[in-house]
Structure formats: structure tokens, C-alpha cells
Length: 153
Image 1 (tube, helix red, strand yellow):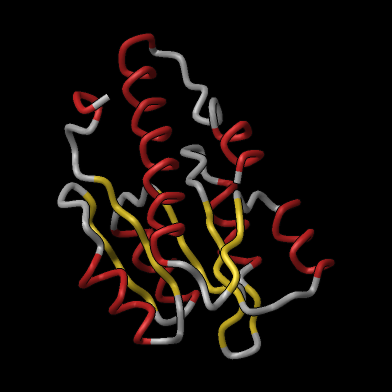
Image 2: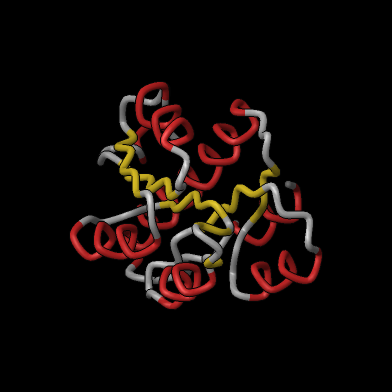
């Protein structure tokens, strides 16, 4: 599987808490992963228009605004970027809305950083594999493997 990771992968972390952004930016252990950070959903969309993002980790709400607009933008793209939500919100109907819109999983705050890293690595590995396979076969099934993984989390 190491041969698949030839290009750097990009993770966008969106949170209004600078400590969370710094945690990912300064301590993410994988050298082949570039971490971008945004303090707002608008800033996240701007970064996504300039960079090829492989995975998004986002706070569910920033300044009272939920991340559904960002989630819809990400999941409507052809690349099917995995979207992970971090939240302290325990509203089951809101969580269901996020899942219905394409969020892959949730990590409740306070979260276990090692668990978030493991989730991130799994999704990046699956995405890299799907891109590699698409390059070999010309077929595009970006979603392959993601549903099964989501069910395990």
C-alpha cells in the first residue's frame, strides 16, 4: 500500500478554536500529509477553491452556523471528499442531517486525538487507493470502500 502514497495528501481542518487547528497543524505525524486550517466555513471554501483537498475535518457549528453548506459543497464535488465532523453537539436529529448529507463519521469533543488520526489515515488510504485504481483502469468509483469503513467506525 505504500506505493500508492506517492503524492502528498491534503487535509483541511475547520474549527473556530485555534488550539484545535494548532493541534492538527503542528502535531500531525504523517509527513506525506499537508494540513490546511480554516477558522470559518467561508475560509474553508476559499481554501478548497485553491487547493486539492483529500479530506475535511470540521467543527459542526461555528458562530451559530452549522456546517451543512460546507458539507453539501464538499459532497457534491466529483471527487467525493470524505468529511469528518468534530462536535460537542449531542442533537441526534442534527447528526442525522449531517449523515444524510454525506458526513462519514463523528468524533465528539472532547475527542481522542489518536482515534481521529486513525480515522483520518483510514480514509486517506482508501481515497489514495481509489485514485490509484482509477489511474490504472480509468474507472471512477471513488466511493468504493468508504461505506464499509464508515460502518466500522
